[in-house]
Image (cartoon, rainbow, N blue to C red; front, side, top):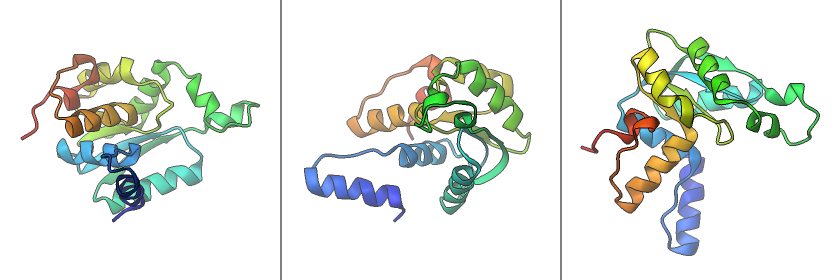
Length: 164
């Protein structure tokens, strides 16, 4: 059991309510789409990016192509995530294009505070591959958990294919 599953299970045990974590939702989405090799966009420090890569590898997902940027380096706010919040969706789009490698099955854009919904479908069209973002995966996982079936075209393939 990975750390995210342990946290989710502790919440379930304590509350009796099903739970979704951001990272577990992303891994579930990657497995659902059959993505085994991805490029990664990581708006994190180098250390956190390495940890994310190691976690994905531990979950049987190889990483080829990484675009890492620590937005906190250019700001004065003590909250490490704050500068990422200020980025326009085009930043995520451009980082994904730089991370992308032809050899991958898809692209992962990590971080819950990185605006991506506006660029998912454009990236998928431009790359010809699925794109999974953290918030998109969380929404999908919650819908799955609740048994809600809906199609949301702007949220890419993940939200527009039927579960098998």
